[in-house]
Image 1: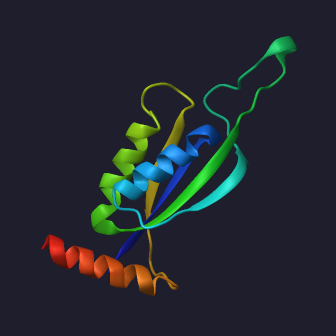
Image 2 (image 1 turned 135 degrees about the horizontal axis):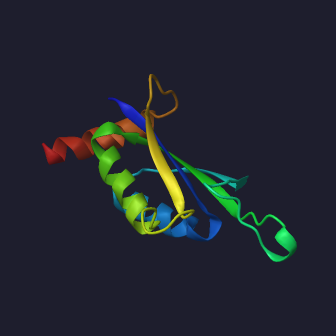
Length: 116
């Protein structure tokens, strides 16, 4: 079984909605890294020219490759990534090997058997 890693960088107020959407699209779990900081094309400035930074979360999903594109597109749609600048980004990376996912593999194997 082959896996991909989806990384999503999102405003912390969208994290729960994206986790629910990803699970509904086929993700079996996630790891969340809180309090990341991001910077877009332009630095946001507020009163007196001070920088404004919003708290971001980094969501990591280890997903079976057949589900990856659907999950990635769902995350982008729910997070409204293409609607305006600074809403978030998501990307996928190939995973060479993964350990500690035996229970996920068993569950996914049954699920994929039903789809085929």
